[in-house]
Amino acid sequence: MEKTKLDKKMIIINLIISILLIAGVLYFVGVGEFINELINIDLFNLFLAVFFLLLVYVGMITRTKLMLDEVGAPTSFWAVTKAHFVGMLCADFTPARAGYFASVGVLNFNNKIPSEKALLAIFGPQIIDFIIKVSAGTIAVFYLITYILQIENAYFLFIGSIGVGVVVLSMILLLFSKRFLNLFSFAKKFPLAKDVYELFERMQANSHALIKLLPKLIPLAAWTWVMKIVSWYFVAKSVGINLELPFPEIGFYFFFQPLVTMLEFVPSPTLAGLGLSESASILVFSLFGIGLAKASAFALVARFKTVIVNLVAVPELMNTLFSSKERLDFLFKSNGKTGSV
Image 1 (cartoon, rainbow, N blue to C red):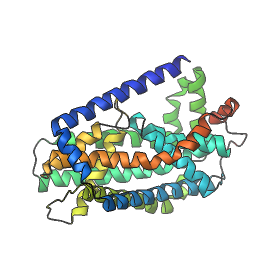
Image 2 (image 1 turned 90 degrees about the horizontal axis):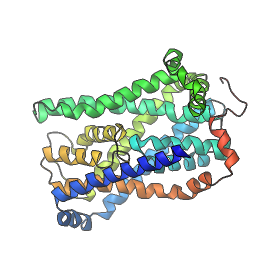
Image 3 (image 1 turned 30 degrees about the vertical axis):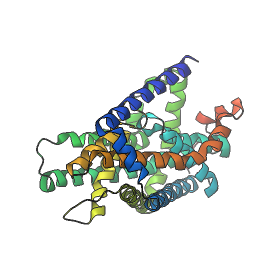
């Protein structure tokens, strides 16, 4: 009970900080100018942005389905789709977007998939996704600030790369290194922490499935990355952003999207980087001569169009949350199917 109260307080605090950051952004931008940009939004381009966002989801759902099949926990594409949308909705309202792992709970509660296999199906492909974004984002940012913008002392732009790089390394070690996991063996002394520790032990027993599926997962990761970039490109067009660059304009988003996305995953006292990533978007756009009103319109439309799409998961989320209390036992249990494939 005390932990639940603490979690609620932290969510409220994170929400307040995020709201203050957004309010600060709008104050400096000018609320009137911001609203004017929203009024003149191009709905066709916004529709295209949503369409390509859904194509991102197709790639993410497909990779989860492939992983579940490989670890011997097959389920329908529709079941994975519902779990995915719940995870994305929860990610919109949790620090470092950690709520995406709610997908694990949905697969476990509603489809009886062993928790370690559901977690591996979500956790594993996300590592590949992060590696691509960190690599591409870091290389592109270095190139742009050094050769295009010629900005000195712009090392702050690499904060996201460092933060997500640490997360990626930790994820890889948790997935494949028993020695690294043993560093947290003290967790066995605490009831809930013990369950989480044992969950990762069982997940490691199936981790070879990720290696086996790499030839399929890497193209899917590239697919989701490119589709997300195209989606953001059309968000920019919907608010009238046009960039004068010595290369095709869409190439800008190949570095811009990973940079902002990395900031969403950096642990911070905000809801999924709300306020932090928007500020980063405005800062980067300003370096390319885009006005504050247009840049802030892009940042908030890019975020909230995703939230609105994810709201379709509310019924499934409610169904999971208000299921019988006994079903919560499934979360950290292997359902008698522990072991490798």
